[in-house]
Length: 156
Image (cartoon, rainbow, N blue to C red):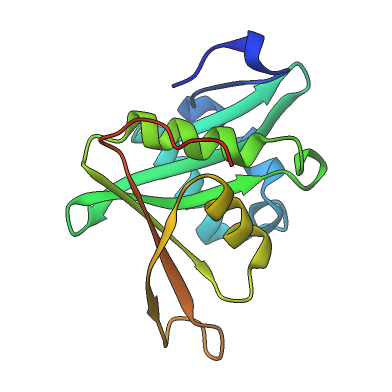
């Protein structure tokens, strides 16, 4: 994880289980009381799968990497608090995920309708890897790949 506060006004580090309520507070779905999302956030934190970006005000975003996608790393969740978007939080979380990934490849996905996430992924050096229909009716899922063996992606 990246603990270099000098690069920006926030740090990225591993989240603790005790922080799951704070992460739920910045996740709009969990904040609305979605029990499934809240349980997932707690489990991800307990299992040590969650990185958190934070500044002096608290958490700004979080990222979860799991290893259940064909035994490769997969960014299951990237969430940036609405008020923190546009500050480079998502990019730093993705870079930290790639740097800490223990497999040669790191994947993620985004709905075709999620243009902001697709732009972020392209800027962060991810490449499209495939399209899957049927997860969300009428909104296919676009999968992305970022090789992890060559270190962080170049800035674009």
